[in-house]
Image (cartoon, rainbow, N blue to C red; front, side, top):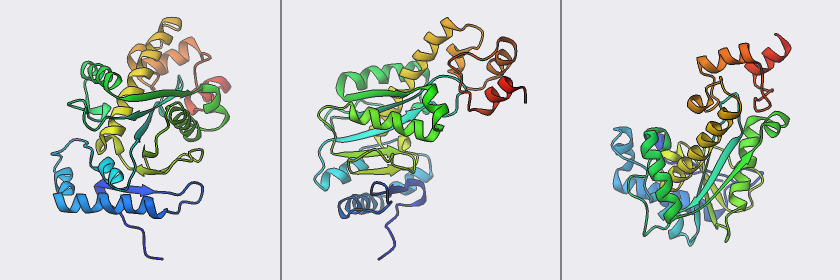
Amino acid sequence: MPAPARLPRRLQVITFEQERCQRSSAQERVVQAALSFCLATGRETRFSMGMTKPDYSIEQAAVAQGYLRIAGVDEVGRGPLAGPVVAAAVILNPKDIPEGLNDSKKLTAKRRVAMDAAVRDRAEFAIAEASVAEIDEHNILRASHLAMERAVAALNPPPDYLLIDGNMIPRGLAIPAQAVVKGDAHSVSIAAASIIAKNWRDQLMVDLAQQHPGYGWEKNAGYPSKQHREALQNLGVTPHHRRSFKPVHNILYQE
């Protein structure tokens, strides 16, 4: 069997068949089409020079193979000490893509809110969470995948192809899919999902901060900032903290 086709290093698209990590012929054709596009347009050179934003080229490669409802999927909240992990799935209208879509991490808070509204107005989307209890019961990776699976399942009608941010496809997804490394920097669909998920989770943590003042969640979104770590020592652990995460575990068990 020939070696799997790979996109250039900065635009790696890894496709897996569910559970066994083997490409289907249809998925392989999508990867090949994306590779051909990348080489024909010199997109890899532009990425290496930092001169481009996410676009619709990966989605277009899937369209060329007959897929019509293509959803970008991303999650946010793997690193915080508190709060759920949140995922979003977004199906963009290729004829009405909001101007200025970009990786949520590259947008100011004000711009992110504006893009969130634009995506909600023009695209199909779904948002889902995996709880703190699920994070502690499984692990953060599996909980992230659960949130992704739930977001995809909430889209109705369902998508027929998925672009997943990262290098793994959640095992509970039965829809053809490919994982896109740093996908929010390359695919507008994944970028849109990253914006929707981050805005949702940020607002959730603002709301939780009103119930549990002192941890700074309205600013740090549950991430381990200095204020958050000091508050853990002084105020203790809340029901929204992830007990399986070492800084929280150590306080609970005085390690």
